[in-house]
Length: 417
Image (cartoon, rainbow, N blue to C red):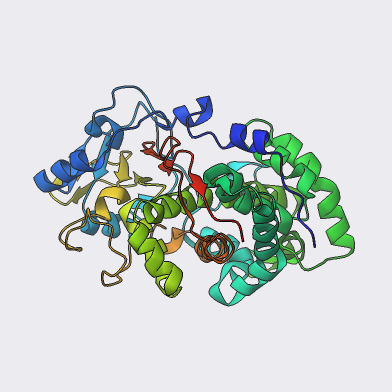
C-alpha cells in the first residue's frame, strides 16, 4: 500500500500540546514537576489532595478521576503505594459506579477503561490477542512500516524537519485508523471528531462495519465484527453495532492519543544527548533500552486514578469509601527506593518494570504496538537521516504538560544522502 501524507497544518492544529483542549489537562504547564513530587514522596507515600494541587497548580484541571468536586481526593507518590493500588481493583476500582455494557447507545458504557472484574476480562479478551507481542509483526507489516517510510519520504530531500508533529504524531493516528479500514483522507477527521463529534466517527465507521460483516478482511475492525462474547451463562453472541462503535471509539482514541507524545519524548531525550544517540545508532539493541528508560524517566501519562470502594487504611492514611486515589506514576517511576539516581536519564541502567503503562488487569492494551511504532519510527530515522541532530538555530524542544506530558516542536537537521 502507499500511504498519503496527511496535511501538516491540520496535524499541527490537532496535536498542539498547548491547545484549548489540552489546556484542560494542564497542557500550559511548562515547569518541572519532579522536584515537588520528590518532596511529597519523601514526606509520605500518600497525601490528601490532587496531584496538580500538591504540585502547586491552583486552577481546576480535568483528567481521569477529575474533577469530581464532591469526592475527597488523595494522591500516591511512591512506587510501592501505586503498585499496590493497581494490583487491587476490588478496593481501587477504575469506575465510580458499575457499568452496564448493554446500556443503549455508544460511548463509555462499554469502555474497557471503566469496566472491572469478570466483565472487563470478557470484553478485553475479545481484542487482546490482536495486541499481544506475537502479533506485533502484523501491525508492523500491514501499517507501521509503510506509514513511516512515506512520512520520511515527505521531508528527506529538505535536510531539515520538525519531527514531533510531522512525524511522531502522524504514525499512531495513521496506524490505528488504517487498522480500522479508514482511508488516509479521513484519518485526521476521525482524530478531530473523537473529542467533539463522536457521532461523525460512527458515521464514518458504519459502512466499514457493514462491509466487514459481509466480507471480513485482515484488519482490526474485522476482528471486532467476528468476535464472539460469552455472557455470564456461557452463551456466546456477536457484538452489536453499538458495542463495536464503543470499542472503536476507545481504541481510536487511545491508539492516536499518547504514543506520539512518548515517541517525541524519547527522540528529544536522545537528541539532547548526541553521544547516547550515537550509541543507539551504532547498536540498535540499545533502542529498546532507550524507549523503556524514557517511559520511566518521563512517562507521557504521569497519573492514573482509581475510586475507593470501601473504607481502607492505605500506607498510613485513612481513605474513605467514595474517595478518589490518584496514582502519580511519574513520581513512582523515579522512586529512589527502586532506582539509583532516578533523575538521571541512563539507558544502561538495569531494566526493571515501571508503571508507565499501568499495572494489573488494566495494563495498557496497546503497549506492544506503541513500542513497535516507536521502534520502527526511530530506527527508520537513524537509517535514512545521516548526522541527525537538533537544529541549533531553532527554538529547542521543551518538556511541558501536567497530566499529559510531551515535548514541544523537535526541529532537526540532517545531511542529504
